[in-house]
Amino acid sequence: MTTSLASAQIPDTEAARINNAISRITDPQSELSVEKGHSRILTFRTPLLRVSVADPSIAEPVLLGQQEIELIGKSEGSTSVAIWMGDKQAPELLSFVANVLPSKHLQTEREAQIRKLESQISLMFPNSTIRLFPIADKLIVKGQAHDVEEATQIISILRRGQAQSIGNGTNVVTSGQAADVLPDDLLNVAEGMIVINLLRVPGATQVMLKVRIAELKRSAARKMAADFDVKVGDFLFGSSLAGAANAIVSGTFGADSFEVVLEALEQYKVAKILAQPTLVTMSGQTATFISGGEFAVPTVVGISGASAATTDFRGYGTLLNFTPTVLDKDRIRLQVNPQFSTLNQATSVNGIFGVDTRSASTTVELREGQVLAIAGLTQQQQAGDTTRLPGLGNWPAVGTLLSRRNVTSAETELLVVISPEIVQAIDADDAPVLFPGMEVTEPTDTEFYLRNRIEGRPGHHHRSTVWDNYRDELIHPKLYFNSYERSARFFMSGDVGFSK
Image (tube, rainbow, N blue to C red; front, side, top):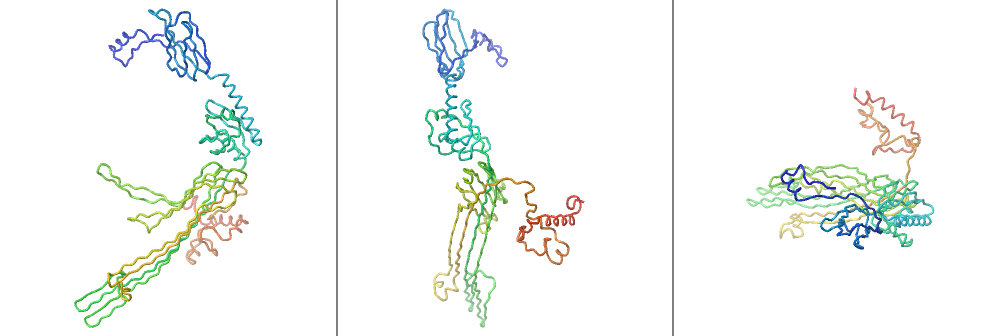
């Protein structure tokens, strides 16, 4: 096939010069197939002059004589081959595409080895149904495993400790340690192949994780200081260590006077934090729970000497990330990362609050319903400082009036506890009718104006929307729910609230 290099993008004079310099361009006219690891002998009618291959790593020509070539398939792919033959003065050019195909014998042998490997795995795990499908450089594992632990072992044996596998099924099994329990000739079949896990694991694989983060902070502080002013004639002497504005002891003796301010304080603080997030997800899947808010943090960005004010938002509250893997009927492996943060006004800078964060990240294994403390902290802090006048402040009696002393102590106790459970969905008829807040209604005029109530639940002490006698209300849900509906009809006006 002869073509021209002339193109619309090339000027006519340049295209003409190129066409005049090149007499012809020959493209491959035919195709020749050869299996990988095999060869084909090509015998020509005229003597051969030379042979050229575009990619010798795919096909390699070996000259056997003046009129014979052995074309060897080295790797799968396609490449072009050019052969010159005949008269040296006017040689004939033959160009074709050499396609190197997979060896049918090797492919048949590999499929037989994979079927044998499939049979051996089925014998090792009789409660699981496994099928192996080789496609190019991938090995697809399909079927149903007895449980997650067997699925993990099967994938680990096929991968022989590789870094990871690709999962796209009901359950994704990650890496694990595998022992070479099968002969090397069988394991070598899957070596170098990407294992795609499509195994399905029956049974209840939804895991609910309960996390409790409990913290108790206690602090105590004592402060002692005194201010005084003494005026004797034209001489004035005093101190302002306590920082008080008004004197509590004063006197005047003729032209002389004195004022004394005493400060003695004791301060106690206590803070309790209890967060109990609960989250449900499928085995092998990662779930995230966030409950909190954000606060603004102004920042200044400078570009080429110019500055501009921007605002970033940072979050605080409760954050829970966990990934469960059901290994047995009730044995669960958890990768859990709980985090709880609160705003701290004491560490604020320029009106921007600081953040106190409690977090943990770990991998544990426990059975359903068991409780495990994954993190804990007990911390005690003591500090003291004094400010005094030099010299006189060191005197035993007078030094009390010429100094200021602070002593503080703080205790912190923190505990993070987790407990997993395997759960299933329930029918709508079995679901509870009452939910938090459904029995909290708008107060009547009598309750609001005379009894100073903001909830329509007289006779009940409310710490939150959770009521004290919730067990009785769950036993008789219809009675309480009907009262809620009656109150809604009584207080609502229009289609939705006060829309009319």
